[in-house]
Structures are given as structure tokens and as C-alpha cells.
Length: 614
Image: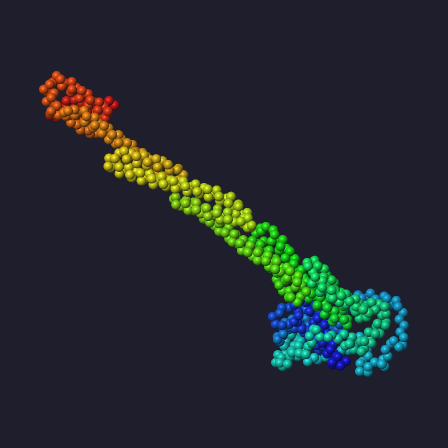
């Protein structure tokens, strides 16, 4: 085989492996594969842009599967490397043991009885003559065992990597780094692929023809399944689906319709994947698989978005149970919106995506607003609990009427805030329960605050009235003093036993009551003296002044005037009765005043004394 032919085989192998990676491993659109044979060993390099993560195990598995279907490398070993573009060293390496695929072994096993049962008679002209063979191609016993030379590619990565069995992979940094370019001259995935038969050695083609003639009917079934002979049903089905799927996708109105189209596409992919790597139509199959896979991925993306939208709508219509529940609804709407926003106008799914996107976005906005309000209500609920705790603490330390007024105001704030939480909030039920607990506390605080206010007012009124009573007493205004002492006693008696002022008020009750009694006595005395004085004045004077008098707490002192004594002396018989009447009148006044009476003559000599009856 010429060097150019070998290079084409290697290039075709690299493209085939690259297509398999693209079809089977998501995110490998920018991955590139290069192959080279050195020292009778196949080496495969997989490169990707810097910063892109890769699943090395999956990549090694896909490359190994792809190589197992290549006739040339079955039963051999190959080295596979993975590295980032621009890096000197691969960061992953694996030795691949290329065994014959089990499916191929099974197919060959299935047709062996049929081959043995046939009597094979070959016509002389059906067997290629050795003399007709190309003299440049060596003839071996096995036409499929054609020796393969070692093609050396200009873009080989062997110049950049040396394989060391004992220490692994080391770069030949100094000598070859400048000229190493593994992608120079490589073709794109979209370039025309050559059928694998076109690059096979002549002996392989002749051997295949001989084997085909020998195997007969059994091999016909095997080769038709590999899309080598007769029509390829997998391709016909795939092409039909390809031509119809675009129209079906554009006309889809629901996720169920999309899933029906996707099932057809996935079935086509499964059928195309049965075409082995050594089939002449493998490259075309991979192209269709790649196209279908991308289409199926997009459909899955939209279907998943629609399913998320349906789930989000159900949660939106249900009553809000918790803030976390509302956040889950928000996340569902975001998961529904994000995939739909990535669908570009030139995509067949664009119309369906746009028909749902505005509604989803509006629903997300509504949920965002609801979430903001819900967070506000729940924060208020937490704040209310904290204020309620503070009110409870204040109750235990309140020592005055003003303290209880503050407690009452605090409980009013708590209750009013709880009443403001709407029924649509997830905290509504908790707010109702707290109201049941806190409203009695508010009523109690109001009652206690009112009681303390009245107690404080009564106490202050009592003290003020007592001070005023003392002032009146000092001015001998005993009637005003009595009135003030009565107000003081009444006020202090109004203070409730469970108020803060009760203990302070109790001693004042006895004090104020005693002062009231004294004031009443002084008032009575004052009233008696006034009446007595009036009575004495009218009794001691009638035309002439009969007597003079003084009123003291110890009694009444009456002194006869000299003028009256002269009248008595000049007309003793007639005036004797008058003196007796005067004396009787003074005795009555003494009895009424409850004061002792002493009568003196003008010379100061006691002439009569009287003590009132007790």
C-alpha cells in the first residue's frame, strides 16, 4: 500500500472516532481526534480546548468501542491520550485492548452451522488466481491479514510525546515543541468521507469477495445488516423521519406531540447505531446520528421545560404552605423559562417555545412578587414574636402606672401586626394561633394599666387633699378641713388591693381617718362656741347690759355688770325674779354647749356654778 493510502486510512479512522465522540458524548463539539501508528502500535490523541472539562472514562470507552469494529486492529492494543490544546503533556492515558465485539462473534457463531451444512463448490473462474494479483502486494494465507505499514503523518503527535513504560508519559520539550501542530491539514467533520472499502488493500477486497462466495446465504444476512449489500432499511427509515420531523416539530402544540416525534427520532438513532464501524455507511450513519441526537436533545430540553411549567402552574394554583414551597415554585418557573429562552428563531421548536414563554415569565414575575411579600410577612411574624417576648418580660418588671401603660401599648402593637397578616400568607395560620394566645394578654394588660392609672390618680388625690386639709386646719377653717380630710380618706380607700399603690396607701387610711375625726371635733366645737356666743350675747343684753362672758374650752365664765347689780340693789324684790330667769337661761346655754358655767359678781366673787349633764 502507498503511504498516501495509509494516511487516508488513518485519517478516516480519526474522523470516525471523532464522529462517535460527537454522537455519544455531549459537549464534545470542539474535541478533535488524531491517530498514528508507531512501532506497530496504534496511538490515538483526543484534544479539547483549554478550560473544557472532560469525562476521561467515557472518552476511553467510546474510542475503545470504535476501534473494536476496525478489522485492522482487532486483537491488538492501542494507546489513547487526552490533553488540552496548547499543553505539552497529556493528562490522561489508557491502554486499550481491542477484542472482537461480542455482537460480531455471536453473528458469526449463528451462521456457522449453516455454512457447515452447505456443500461449497467453487468454479475455477470464481477463485482469484495468484498470478493475477498485484506483484507489489504480498500474498498471505489469510486475505484479511494484510500487513500494514507504519504511516508517518506530518501532523503526528508522536514527535511531541514519548511513551515510557516505566515512568509514563514525558514530553520531548526542547526538540519538537516548535514544529508540533496536531491539527495542521486536518479536515472538518463535514468533509466528504471515503467508504472504507475504497481504502482497503486489494488483498482485503479479494478476500472479502472470496469469503462472500464461501459463506453464501448466511453471510448475505450478516452483510445486509451491516448495510454493505442490498438496500439499507435503517437509512431509508432515518431519511423518512428526517424529512417529516421538521414539519411535525413545527406543528407540535404540546409536550405529548413532541415526545411522539422524539420517539421516532430516538428509534432511528438506535437503528443507525447498529451499523458497525467497519460498514461503508458508518460515516453517514454517524452524521445522521449526530443530527438526530442534537434534535432529540433540543426536544428533551423543551419537553422538560414544558413539564416544569406544568408542575409550576399546579404549585402556583395551590395555597402557599411555606416560604420554601414558594421558592420551589419559583425555581420550577426558572427551570421552565431558561431552556425556552435558549431556543433560537431558526430552530423548529422556536414557535412552541415562544407560545409558552410569555406566560411563564409573567407567572415567574407574579411568584417573585408573592415571594417578596411572603418574606415581608414572615419577617413581620418573627418581629412580632420578639416584641411579644419583650412585652412578657416587661410585665414582670413593671413597677408603676407608666410601666403598665408601656406594656399595654406593646401588646397592642403585637396584636395589630398579627391581624394585618393576610390569609394568602403561609404565616396566616400561625398568626391566628398567636392571636389566640396574645389577645388575652392584651386585655389583661389594658385592665392592669387602667387599674394602676386609677390607683395612681387616687393616691395622688388623697395626698393632695390631706395637704389641703392641714392648711385649712391651720387657718381654723374647720369645715373646709373636714371636707378635705373626707376626700383624702375616700381616695385612699379606692386604691385596689392588687395595685402597686396599695401598700403605700394602707398606712394613710388610719392617719387620714384620725385627722378627719379631730377636724370634725374642732368643727363641732367651733360651731358650739358660735351658737353659745350668740345665745350669751342675746341673754346678757336687753336694754341694759346684764353681764359679760368668755368662752373657753374649759367652760363659760359670766361676770355681772355693776350697772345690773345697782338695779338689783335698788329694787331688790322686783329684780330678784329677773336674776333667777337670767341664771336659768345661762344654765340652758351651758347645757347646750356642754361646757361648765361659772357666774361672778362685778367684784369677781363667784356667785353660782353649774356643770352640764353628761
